[in-house]
Image (cartoon, rainbow, N blue to C red; front, top):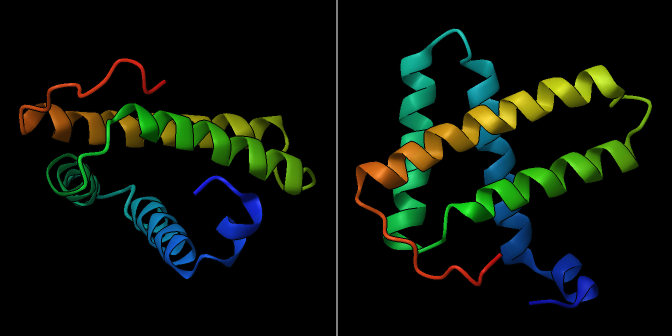
Length: 114
């Protein structure tokens, strides 16, 4: 799916976006509970590695896109300081997810997917 209009109409994509934001919300709400954060992100990583076969670098790409969209669409709520905090959050999420990939023995499928 590459057409932006098709993406906007996709209920499947909208549902997945909601799940992504729900997972991020769960992480933020549980920052004081590292075991919960590790558990949630471990499940996300393992599901994407084993069930969906998604290369982990797509999490980095998605993080960058999310930060860009938030800063462009909500500049009054997303100044440089907030962007830095979100960048750290997304880096921590990626670190946990990538750890889950390593834990299940993920082998990179394609180096050309960048």
